[in-house]
Amino acid sequence: MDCKNAQILIAGYLDRELDPVQTVETEDHLHACAVCSQSYKDHQVLSEGLRTGSVYFKAPAGLQKRIQRAVRQAAKAESAPRWLSWSWVRMAAPLAAAALVLFTLVPFLRGPSTEEILTREVVSGHVRSLMANHLADVPSSDQHTVKPWFNGKLDFSPPVQDLATQGFPLVGGRLDYLDNRPVAALIYQRAKHLINVFIWPSSESSDSGIKSETRQGYHVFHWTRSGMTYWAVSDLEESQLQEFVQLLQNQSPTTL
Ligand SMILES: [Zn+2]
Image (cartoon, rainbow, N blue to C red):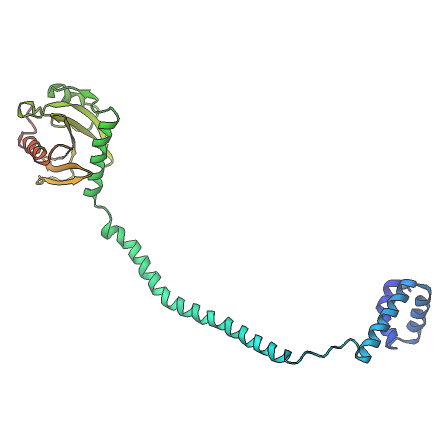
């Protein structure tokens, strides 16, 4: 018998459960092997202890009640959040749905209109032209120089008028980009104030009245006339810019 088998049989040997052959073989091994012999002695001590009750300890008074109380509290603590979370879900689900609808609709209901976006773009275009030292691609006060300059650069021919005799001399022309397309920019001047007029073909066939607004201290006027969209922007005093816009509008676009 080897140690592995002996270790398995030790408990049975101790309890006198082995058959006579196994009993003899186990006894022989225990006599010959110090390790298994020590293991047998340990089993004997444990077995004796269990029988005499020396390894038992009496539970302290009140332990049972403490355990029961702890179990009840744990059960309560566990069920409370579950109830809470369920009611939360029941309340939150419609709220979440409503929020989703709002977040989806708000951009459509209250988002910036095309006109607002364009106003911002126009003001930005104006400021950029003043900042970037790129006011005019074709610096000229001659409308007969400025207008042909756009040929081949745009898919339309912007009406160009000089309003020098009315106090708003033409300064030049420039290509710009607005409303997702290249546009013509005409620059006019009144005293030290510059006016950008952005022109591009309108999607509206009919003429519109002049609309105006003020943004970031700049006055913006826009209108549609003869198939063209006009946006005029400047820091010029509003009434003067309005005067300019009316002059521009009253000129026949075909005048050249
Ligand atoms: Zn052994």
